[in-house]
Amino acid sequence: MNVSVGTIFSIFRRDASNTANPASDVLQPGRRQVAAGYVLYGSSTMLVYSTGFGVHGFTLDLSIGAFVLSHPNLQMPTRGNLYSVNEANSASFPAACRRYLDWLRSGQADAVYSSRYIGSLVADFHRTMLKGGVFLYPPTERYRDGKLRLLYEANPIAFLAEQAGGNATDGRRRILEIEPDALHQRTPLYVGSRFEMEKLVQFLAE
Image (cartoon, rainbow, N blue to C red; front, side, top):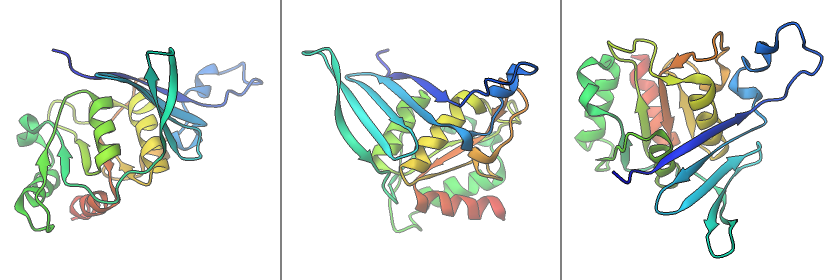
């Protein structure tokens, strides 16, 4: 199908003195990440990462076999005109999410929003990072706790979003503040530009 896919990574500091419970080195809230990023494989190969001092993107130059800095100090636009969500599941989204999607489509925000959804988290987030807007993966009747994994999907994506000037939440709290209790813990994820995210939070609070 030639769809862009990616690899996501997250790095924490290890407590070398911790021999009793090594799992606690992994089960840390996202705010303690020291680095996070992804590699996007598509028409070009890109490495996008942050060590907590902004976000930088490198593109693989096949002629020299090395990654070249192509997107220094990436900043997510404060507002976009795209939203990304699997609307096939919208009937089982929380009511607040359905109202928010109606608002995006209504033109009330003095903007005409278009829907873009690939179904590849890295590709969908990469587009949101570059063009702004919002990516939503709400809970559904089938996945009441959300479907994406907190530790190795939501946390690194949220870290990058915040470093680029955006926001990320599970609908109730900042993603990076969630205290994990399981390696494969799932979470809803809403991430994007400040304008769309602030409006989303208003809908979720109603």
